[in-house]
Length: 331
Image (cartoon, rainbow, N blue to C red; front, side):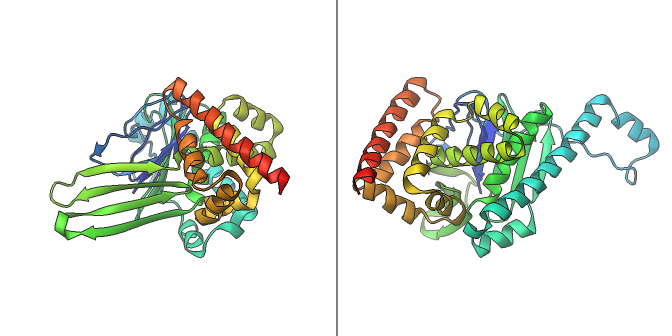
């Protein structure tokens, strides 16, 4: 699954979140963050195991005949570096084609500000031999930069992870800084898709404190749902393989059910356009006052690293959706 860091979503078989706007992708993974942290948040890391917290690491490869001697190229061109060079080319190609598909299909939901950011391009996109145990991808966003990291495991995984992280990049991205000179720092409010996070940054120590986050479960559910659909458009077999991996499985199932009740346009307008108010109003009108917040909280818990909590949260969310369905039929 994916990890997003603020200031981002990444794919990971375990969930991870760090400051700066990042996300990770996981198979039933959950992002966890300490109440006191020293870096910006990452939204989108894809992982394959629940509950891993850390930073993106790995070896990057750069081979240039114009910058290195023939002898140096002979040293660099090992099977490992050649494979990473191939992975880098694939990740860049998939990112561009996935982005073009998103803009063609869902560009009408994207604001002019985000269109300009997307047109300027991602700051950095890298294929790495390792981005942490269980992680397969990550997205980081802050007011100045955006980056995608994809683990180089195999071609199918790289393609899926890159499409996932590219959706994070194409979604509603914002960062607001609120100066607090009386407290010696400032508040950061970071949004990627439907995930909203905030923390206090100390200008004196350079540390971040009081990280809070909401909407990550819904965000990963939407991102993975859209990723699986794009893969299905490319090939039914690719779509089936992605769905069988059960990346954020509970969140995807619940988000798909939510879409059937509120409508595709309402969900996409929230994810790509930042119109959370319309989604909240629609859910509350069917489920009851303040039930959107309740449902969002349930979705966040469905990507927990605690199995019992995931199951309980899924049942709770199903009850809310069932109530919405009944009222929708009656109206």
